[in-house]
Length: 266
Ligand SMILES: C[S@@+](CC[C@H](N)C(=O)[O-])C[C@H]1O[C@@H](n2cnc3c(N)ncnc32)[C@H](O)[C@@H]1O
Image (cartoon, rainbow, N blue to C red; front, side, top):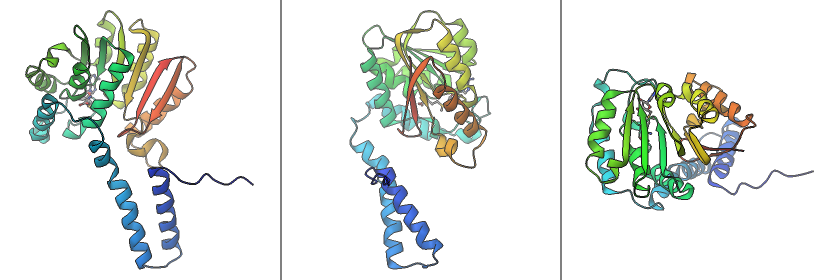
């Protein structure tokens, strides 16, 4: 008989801890010292992960830090909804570790032209622009004119910001108008549109040889594998299944933040 592998990673150890805590509760042990200790251990394991990733990742630039801080200070609650993703909120911003990850992708793919679908206040666009060689460009698509202007005023504060061209309007319309090829694409707009974006990219001439598509939120808060998905959760589950069964591509889903899938033509 083969045994299950021993949990050796933060998430598998956390799952084992929670499983054993649930078993103690199911057995009606009540709140014992052991149970309390184990709940605290599980909490520390989960709560410590993101701060530790921050600590171990190269700090963000002053321009990105200023953009993040301006985004946090804005009053999103009073904004009219134009976004196809629903209300705009500061939590949309990808942030420090994912920004550094995207900058790494720019370096690793030696990208010169980058396309972003879903810009919000511009954190990821600027993070990628900072990693570009001289003469490189990020074309960033955003449907909401208010955030597009917000991002542009932040870009004006840094040299790298001048490498970002903002295209305002529904991304699919913008894609149909674009010329040339892109070495890296970051998809981070309305979740129900993901399949159409990736399908369009793969069947168009917009991808350079060896281009990489990075798709954000492909774990969508765990909804694709949980039992209570929202509309966005279902859209991501269907998107993930579609990508997994598409013979045109190879892909890997990384559990970075809310999940990032990297896709390349097979
Ligand atoms: C999660 S946010 C993007 C976050 C950004 N990439 C970052 O890292 O800071 C999603 C953005 O996509 C935009 N969006 C939603 N539907 C869109 C569409 N059809 N075309 C273009 N942008 C869209 C929203 O207005 C929102 O600003």
